[in-house]
Length: 299
Length: 160
Image 1 (cartoon, each protein chain N blue to C red):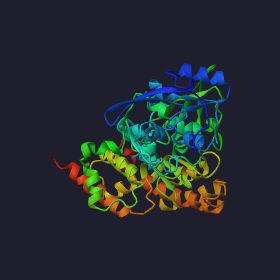
Image 2 (cartoon, rainbow over the protein chains, first blue to last red; image 1 turned 180 degrees about the horizontal axis):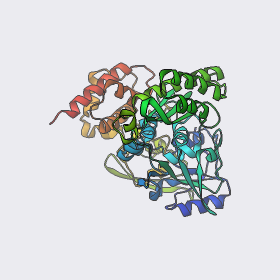
Image 3 (cartoon, rainbow over the protein chains, first blue to last red; image 1 turned 120 degrees about the vertical axis):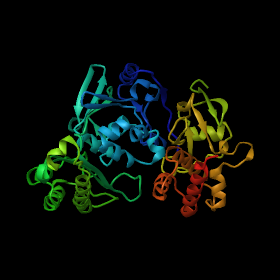
Image 4 (cartoon, helix red, strand yellow; image 1 turned 30 degrees about the vertical axis):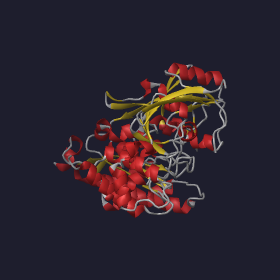
């Protein structure tokens, strides 16, 4: 099918874009990479009065290192993130998550801001933002707000952004040097949304201990779920095979996943256990014993 | 009509222009307004990959872009692969390895493979399969397609 009629605006600045959103009072949609919105338009599941196309706002595409953080403009393409040396070095978990986003021709258009604002709980970036402890910067007529993941994602495909606000930047703290990481997901076909995905990060310490662990789900609920009680098992008991198994079992108890056409709740719970174990084993194998953070462990 | 917008871009090295409603998809503009019917319309929601073209050198679904968004861009469609009727090494490899049956997915396969080989000139078989997972072949002739892309990679990578 083809989209219904809409008015089209392609502003050159964030201020113009925000003014347009305000003018349409909730009847306009922002068009970022279009890889989720345009299918909805083609099916006429979405019939906005106007589209505000952000692809001409050149100032929204960047990747910058800044005082222990990496700042990404909302319109940074997923392919740019995939190939960025800064991301590979500072945020390798995000680099790995990116290779799982859709397919090559989806990532050439798809953006980090678009994926986060679309807030599909089965997508990789909402889970990665949560696992990395990042923030998003939101601009509206009343100025800027900074939100952490838990304040951004409300439920399926819904954020706390007002109709006249837009996500302009993603700010992610650099991963500690030598941290282990893995993004594991299961989907029926490569490139599909995950039935369940797990983002994992571990920071090692002397004697196989764990200074910090992060475990976050994709696809196991209406928003990404941080598995704090499973992380605590590792932080208390270390990174042994037994502790990893205990954390994986605990992870499955911490989620309350939906049943739908793709998978039952029980199946998703089981996947949460299996993928948490896999992600942790791969993350631990990657712990860099030569790094300053892990030096204590090696010494 | 007043709600039509002008569109100017380059397709296969040629400047082209037209007017269309903002809701017109790029693939429909290429086919209907410019007569470039080599790009195929499949699912119209970004799943099948048949409509893949290059936008400023990168593979993109032309059913998920509005024609007005391509204003100022450099596009390449399957017609641009064989200027003056001389087949591109990828097309030669597709012929050699029987990498097409009905041909519906072929334009999307070719342009996706072109971007894959541009960004990864020596892909493993696994990387070829991942790259091409963006395009569906309902004849299920994937084996020949994977073999053709591997052969084209070797041919293109050879110093000339």
